[in-house]
Length: 571
Image (cartoon, rainbow, N blue to C red; front, side):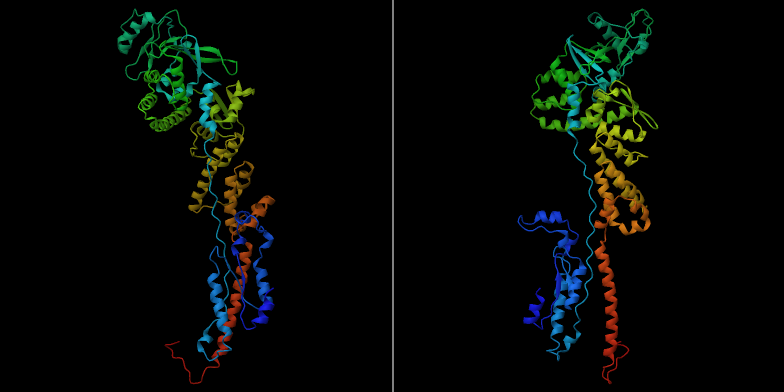
């Protein structure tokens, strides 16, 4: 547009054609338009010219062509250096006697700009869902699948779950590990006050001493001096039942037995462990203790802190006792660390119960075996499981659930995540199978953790110089199908940044991908197509110019003075 006017008013002024904002060729135009002024015209992909357009205009006008990017600091020095060269060359006709102008080179060629490689996308792990934090408290308030009923003050009933109590308190763990079935032949003790003194005496005797009491009435309970667990002795008496007295074992409990009880949530009868508490245990403080065993937290506004501390002392819940002391000493800020340590210990105990199949109440049937689990923990940490066991599904009343197309290793990883909110890497764990199962169970955080694990394993194999391109091509569409969007984005980035190598080795696999994926490959491949074309053009023109320089040097060598001779040392 301006060339004719420039040639009219400045006929001897050299001209250089410059293409600006080179970085827009690979930039995210949506982000660029958002950063621009509100009333400015948005930049469209059609507004960005390819390098061929600039070269055609420069060839038509007979002037050199350069491209720049202030954002990337590319080409700026080339423009000024070559502008100076063009200006000095134009002076040769006017100042031909100046010898230094003869040494000035004509404007040099500009090497094409290689855009920087895009960084790989980061795998972001979402925060723990509120279901995992509030689930235990809601489960205590609405005791679905409860298997323990506490009887307080002869008429107050509190429902709970053995797995939560046993993993939070060693006292409850020992209590629920007792064997008081029909085969154990334990004595029914219905009156406590008449036998208290006898039980205290028995609790001080050793196991050897009991054998010398042949006339001992069928009183089979005694407390162990070493580990605090209850030890039972069988008798050949005539009156047996499943009720077990706990008066000598702990001050908090009176008796324990099993009985069919109506579940307060579902209204269906279920076999539960009935624990009758001592008369000194009141409803309010004991409810606060149960909330702590479920959540690891204690409300600062809780009443009867001293009674809570007494119950915690009897049940050997020393963390709760320390929290009460901190509240009474106006140091409640220290309770946060106690809660964290409580959850760490609880998670380790839950994993131990999962490994040893303690207190399990459901069996998952898988393709390669079975695995036991705990309904309360599953309900409090997964909405899908809560709907399965708490709804009107057939599985809610059954103790077995079938999971087709699922391996035992994969289900083990899912259970550990639901129990501890962490993903533990296992041998022979298939990330895509775990992602598929997590997607079925609606666990987005587990999907993100598995994506992070899969990427770390791929990078580890890549550092060991293993071929991961084929595996990534397999992962791509599976990840897109199972909503593993972060893993799919990482696979797309790897394929695009190594597109030439992958195309050479896996051409059929690339062509078999969906049209959307192939369009993405062509748009985001690195190096881009326009750079490859520019590189070919640059190399071709560079060779032509080198040939021209060789011919020009031969032409100048013929005009040397006859008396000029180059010494071998100088050559």
